[in-house]
Image (tube, rainbow, N blue to C red):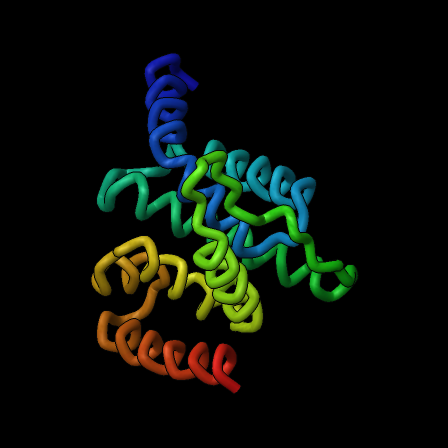
Length: 164
């Protein structure tokens, strides 16, 4: 690969790595799995980068590759491994005014989201990232109307999970 292509990839990956980390957090239960998934997503992005045409934003394309990689690996691992809940996904912020109540709410939300299926997790994740329904639909390969309907159903599902 050319040096320009490599530089472009590294630059865009650095700018969008938080997207990948969030997806990894959503589909893994421990730090080692998170690192493994991040590495696998990066490899898949690198392999596919020469074919990236720029029809969509790099972030949208990276979402799609990362979600597909995570879902594929998640399904494989689900069949062969049982995992233990990992408390390491807390959002530690070293600040005197740290809001522990908000931290507990975030943990409850993650616990509820873990109960959703793969596509629902992806949709919630993108919704929480303030992606519009057009971009969500494009990334997940569904219609915009379908994305809206699914999100409304997921909201109801999460309410039932959080308020039994």
